[in-house]
Length: 388
Image 1 (tube, rainbow, N blue to C red):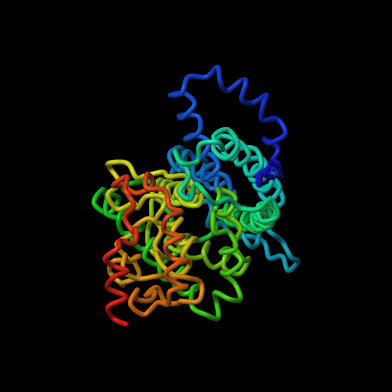
Image 2 (cartoon, rainbow, N blue to C red):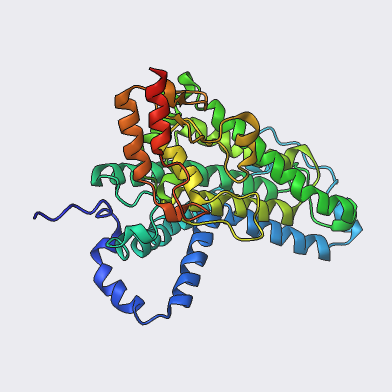
């Protein structure tokens, strides 16, 4: 039997798999799992260049703690008029350093840590996908995997530029609603702003995502992201540039809308990016006990598999609220828009056959119940026959 081409042959870890595996075999499983978790967090924190924001905010926080009131007043001193173009005039002094630093680190982490995560799951555990993969019997082709990485790398450049500009702007005291001392708005608002900001970001993201699943926007922009029916961590940045910028604007909007502490925005952005990696990994990760709002990884994996359903990200309640949560008695495919799907009683025999095959390809261990939650029971098919 001919050897099946490995869809991850384009990653550096494929070439050095045996060497890495030999080293990894000496590491205890608990430590190995911890390293993999940290790697996902680091990838999420750096993939868009937002590590720069963490650094900038920390530096401004220490500056805020050490500066006196007189130093703050001195910043209002008159600046000589200069009609020549200057980055300083736009709060972008030192921008090239931010762009180069942010982009360099982003690519190192994207290829380095991203490659490691691919090796950890898709190479090292490739022979037992039923233990960890959401769609254990389906893999992207080498060509599509290459497209995912190259397209994701191109979008990564855009993300690094956007984060670099924003970080530079904040570092140069550009106007935002970010503050650094809790006493400025009190402890009540400090604790209240966490759920307010998180809910705002997530609910706006739900509608942003759902909007890009309307026929025109989907076919012209979002469809590129849905080339990957079995997504991996590299899929998270493989998005059309227009949509990418729009999404960044949604996520960053709170810093211009209401007073928000620097720790709040940083932690929430890291949470969002971390779960962005998780949700696109194709691995059957599940939420921890302290995350009752967070759906398992297969929730978004189902979105890629069935297209126009499950539009939420970190709070699945939005889909329940608006009727776009995947239902057992309905089928979904790329031609059925608006998240409602089609009733089984209205589906053809061919559509039912495709749906059965898709559902059987899902890993029961990926669901919170460890069972197939959407398997087509015999009674469903009998009910369909009765309606004919």
